[in-house]
Image (cartoon, rainbow over all chains, first blue to last red; front, side, top):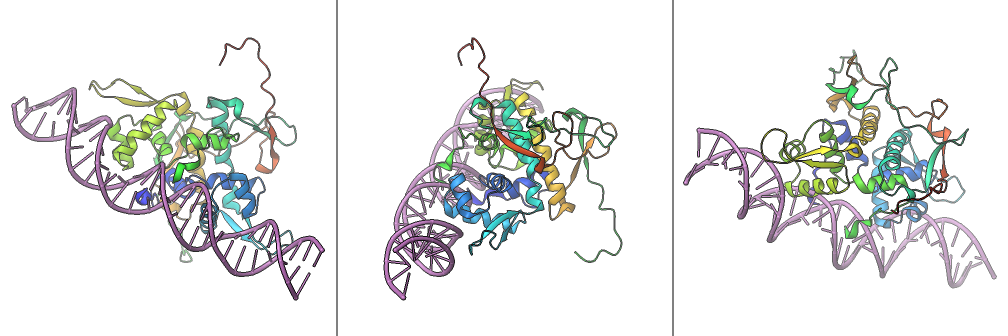
Length: 159
Length: 159
DNA sequence: TCGTGTAGTTGCATTATAAAACCAGATGCT
DNA sequence: AGCATCTGGTTTTATAATGCAACTACACGA
């Protein structure tokens, strides 16, 4: 892919997210990490991707602050990859992807798992978007506005 | 990329979604479509991607039932690409991607737009996940269960 | 009918991805 | 200690996805 047109610096936040995690494997790696997988070998076995790719992806995810490496945990002198808060913040994206598949996939019978409320064991509701005042919003009820100027803060400690 | 490991037929719904719209451009094309862009040239100008790629992507999106072609609308004898319900169903994914960027991006000042409630003009709340009973769920309150057997329906009209 | 714009298609260059082989260090067994 | 094995990669080689640019076909307007 010739230089893959980096979207870094795009002004659309969607493009910016995709630039970070929009490649072929990152979201699946993060999914696995949020499911508790930690070790190189676990990811590799679970995803079935080439190890060299996994190496690069993990490094990139660490660089972007989505995963961080931790020294051990189970005694052995190896390394683990654990999600940071930024990584955990991907959860709603994964839920949205999951629900889209559940709703529109042509072969939903091939879907093996459902996301349930841990307490009741019952499926969760669809993600919902609310206004500040608590009204449920549909897409047509939303619109885009230019972002307000950064509201000049005083005495920023550099940056 | 040697065969790009198709995720079609994966049993994880996230993987299935990514297989459909997880490539480098599809989500941005859908974003544009949901913003009202319809014509080949509009997409091409807005996204700045190569025309041959756009051709392939549009065709794929139509094949997958995410966009459909419509004959005209503005008089000229050209074609338009409009989102289907399945395409409109991508909206929550886009919102989730947007909010992730808004919350975790290292340079949020580069983000140009915010999603607002059309009526009040105020930013929307974060996407929320609820249980059937209406309790707000955090990731730790959710878990995955195997999908229940397809609940044998009677007299399926083949498939 | 000539020029211009739209909507592609085709050909070629480049690079990201993949599969497979290779390897160093840690671990485990005896 | 000695040897095999496992883990977590790196290297090598190939191939397909992407991109750029040039070309085509058709519609439209003057």
